[in-house]
Structure formats: structure tokens, C-alpha cells
Image 1 (cartoon, rainbow, N blue to C red):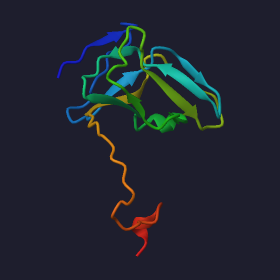
Image 2: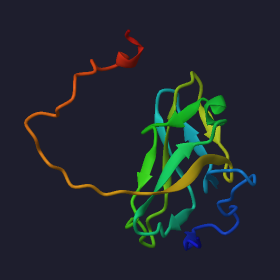
Image 3: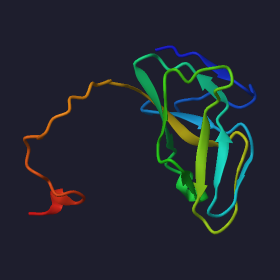
Length: 143
């Protein structure tokens, strides 16, 4: 599948799959980002991407990101297929959970992108779900 992208800074590497078995491609920050302890910082990821209709782009942390003391502030970013205007740069919102300022370097790979199909549904409201109650959080561990 070919997907159009626009880079803001052509000196920052293109998104890339780093191994032949990689499910997601790595995205790098266009700027150096300073994030104070307990605060959220924003890392511009240098691209606008034309996600195919019927798909979404999931932005998730690279597995090594937590070693830097940060994690995505919104867990997973969901990018819609119509978010593709010339100024619609992908941006990672990152929360610093450490006790010190974290500095992320320009060009540092920090997020992964995963393009997945989306199934849109229609909702049918009912009075009864015709299924037994499960009991909420942790209910599968109860015997």
C-alpha cells in the first residue's frame, strides 16, 4: 500500500519500519522537546499523512520510550483518515512521569505508527442485553 506523506523538515528521517517483522513504523521528533516533571510536552512528528479511507493511524509509544521517563499522555493517539491538511502535522503529547526534566532530541524516534482497518457500526438501542452480568473489573479472575 502506498501512502502519501508530507514532511515539514526533509533533514529528519522518513518514517521507517526498522526490521522486516516490524508491525509499526517509527516516527521521529522534528524539534528538541523539553518536558518538566509532571508536565505534558508536545513533540511534532514531522509529517502529514494521507491515511486511506476506511483506516486509522494508531500512534503508540516505542517500547523504549518509558526508559526516558515519558509516556504518551493520551495512551494511544487515534488519527482519522480525514486529518490530512497541509498543516495537520502529527504531534505526540508526552507526559513526563520522572522527577527530572526530560529532553528529547531532534530526530529521536519516539513513537510508532500502525495503520489499521476501521469498521464503522450502527447502534441499535435495546432494553435488555440478553447476557448474564460479568461483574466489572477483574471479573474473569473470579471463580
